[in-house]
Image (tube, rainbow over all chains, first blue to last red):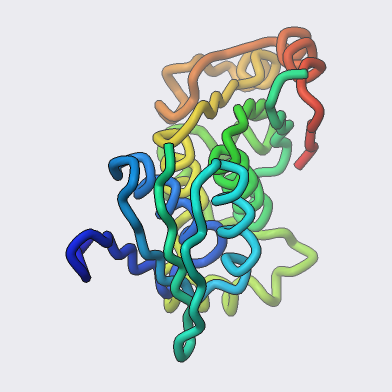
Length: 80
Length: 138
C-alpha cells in the first residue's frame, strides 16, 4: 500500500486475476477510515463489473472509473 | 434463509479446486458465509502436504495441463490453497472433513491440513446446507 495523493490509498492489483483486485479492495476498505478514498488499479476484465457491483452492495461510493493503458482505475470512497 | 453458499467438494484435481477457492473468495467478498464439505478425492486434497504437492489435473484435459501450469506460474497466479486461506482470513469460511471418508481411509483430523475446521457427518452438513440457497457439487 502506498499513498499517492494526500488522502488516497492506492491498491495496485494489476496482474492479479479475478477476484484478486476485488479482494484487495474489500481488504483495503476494511482497514480504511470512513470518508477516506481508495484507488484500485486492475487489469482484470471482471473488475469492470464486479467492483462497481460490490461498491453499491456494500454501501460505499464509486467516485470514478477511468481507463488507462492496459488497466482501469477505480476510485472508491468508504461511506460506513 | 441463511446468507450462505455450501459446496460439496468431491474432486481432488487442481483444475476443480480452483473454482472452489474462487467461488469462496467471491462469496466472502459479497458478505456470504461459506461451508465446504470435503469428501473422497476432495478430502484427499486436504491431506497434510497435499495442498502443496498435488498437481493432478482432469485426465480429459491432460494434454493442456503442462501449458496451463506454465501460464499460471508465469502470471503469478496464487495456488488454490492460498486463495482459500485468504478467503478464510477475510470472512466466515468453514471447511469440514467428511467423517465417512476419514473412517474409510483410516485417518483422523490430525492427518489433515490445519485449514480443515472439523469433522462432520453428511447429515449435519446437509441440514446446514438446507438453510442456504446455494449448494454446489464440485
